[in-house]
Amino acid sequence: MKTTKFILLSSTYLGPVEYFVWLIQHNKAYIDKEEHYIKQTYRNRCLIYGANGMQSLSLPVIKVNGNHTKVKDIKISNSVQWQKTHWRSIVSAYNHSPFFLYYRDELEPFYTKTFKYLLDYNQKLLEMLFYLLDINIKIIYTEKFIEKDNYRFIDLRNRFSPKKENPDIVFPAYTQVFEVNHGFIPNLSIIDLLFNEGPNTVEYLKRMDINPD
Image (cartoon, rainbow, N blue to C red; front, side, top):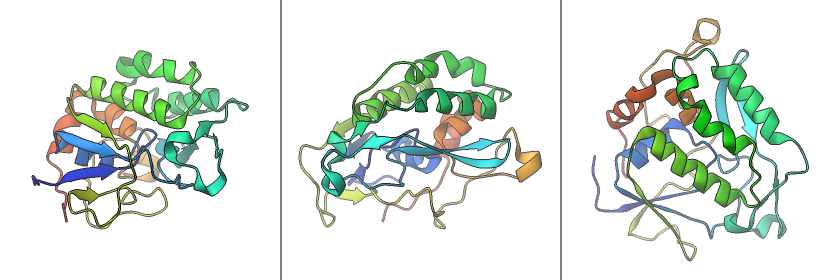
């Protein structure tokens, strides 16, 4: 359903399917880089489907100003080999998916090149996902913090959580590599849908029903 309001999102690391449902059904979105960073959210983690079921990949960060650090100032902690660990987990989870080999060459460099800031990393990764999905969505990064009651926006900054499911949206099942062992797991990282559905990903996102209120 289209709306005249703009959607306001947080930055995410390989965000969940629902995040991309909202993006694909709007031609413009705002991402808040001035908000205070919130830990244990999709801002620095994603959920994939491994051999043992749902698996969380968490990107280590440095909060330069403690709990009052803005998202734009969050640094990536490169003192640990998180990139190697994440990529190994992704390969293990999706090496046998139908479209992993088709997309891996574009995504693998994000696990070898060093980035200083989380926002920059997420931004470049999001741009690559848009390229792989062949979609054109205008992303605007806010220059100031947007208050929750701003009438111009549908505030989705805290709508998506890796710790709880959203009961307002139903995700049609698609084939997943390990579903024979653990069943269908909805709303994982967009790469789960991409590696399993390939070019059908966009159509899947477009036919989802979302509530703009």
